[in-house]
Image 1 (cartoon, rainbow, N blue to C red):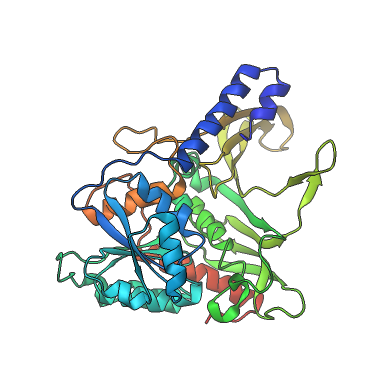
Image 2: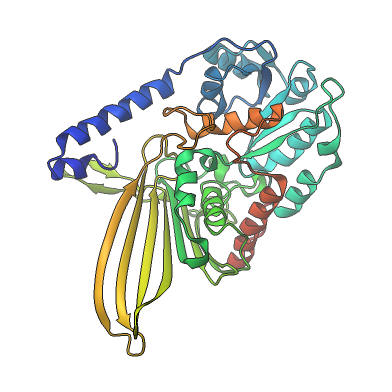
Amino acid sequence: MEFTILKYFLAGETVAAMASFVGFFQRMWTVVNPPQPAKSANAIRIGLLGASNIGPIAIINPARSHPEVIIAAVAARDEAKAKKYAEKYGIPTTFASYQDLIDDPSIDAVYIPLPNGLHYEWALKCLEAGKHILLEKPSVSNATQAQSLFSSPLLQTPNPKTGATPIILEALHSLFHPAFQTFLSLLNRDNIEHVTTTNSAPKWAFPTNDIRFLYYLAGGALMDCGTYNVMALRSVFGAEPEECLEAGIRHLPKGADPVCEEAVTAKWRWGNGGIGELDADLRRGVRWAGWFGWVPVIPSPVVRVKEREVVGPVREGREEVVTRSVEMWNFLMPFLWHSIVIIEEHVVREVGSKKVVKQWTEKEMEKAYNWMEEGKKGEIWWTTYRCQLEEFVNRIRGREGSGVWIDGESSVSQMKMIDSAYEKAGLPLRP
């Protein structure tokens, strides 16, 4: 349900509340049942490595509404599993091994949603075959691997069939949605003092033996939900941090992997003096609220930015100071719902004594389910994954698109920041 509905009802704005409610369900209906246009003759044929749980929302469903994309094949180590998956999602071809799919000359691009520790190996094999790659986050296990992958000469080697050089994209899907880009456009980066990001999953979502918690597969909270926090911090500051100041982890319960964390907090300093903090938890306790005590309340992914600016003299001996906070609720999947709240606290004070002469607060709210700028393609029901797929195809086709992209240098910097937190926390880098 939309974040603002309760507020509208409490204010007596029932018409606005109902419109918000109806809009939500219209979007969700179209997300699940997207239009399916005819496929173009030269549609990009994508193969999936693994019969993954994330595949349907991340690429299978988004591809249905894209006229230039066909999900052509799936490969799994268990061929029976691949066939069952293919039948369920209408995929025409299955392979009994990842390599067989990669070697198929009819496959143009490969989606890699394998466990983190397998990304580097299979991404290189895809590049060797000249395939384009949509690579699930995190791109690889550590910064050394990232540097090796994204500086590989294979990225400059033309595909013998098409003559095109491979495109590789780390799938940090939230970055591609107009809501997150709108949020970034509202920031004054020079004035940022402090940023906090939170992201979590409820404690019951993943058992302690899940692959997300296996060190040898490059698991851990920071390598899972925490990657989005890192992306958000880097995007907010528009730069890379100078130093990881502190980091702490919460170990898994006794009996689970001893060097793999279920939760992590970390703090970095940026060149402008701003501080960015991260709180990522894959097993957060769930609060219970509501009139009857049975409504689960799971913390929403939030980015909070605090800015401070001395505007200057408003008259002789007085100055105005503006403290501004910009919060984005549900930055992870804003297509479901989101809210961008801007609060400005104005203080007029005496220059010498700092005595407050006048103060007031201004507040506004923004939403962006589609691009506002002309020339940027999108629909109000597009998910973050659909927006991401659009830009992946645009890059392969050589089109400008929305202009949002994650290049190899950015993916290397992403892993360097993750590594710095593990080092500060005293945990070994993911292998």
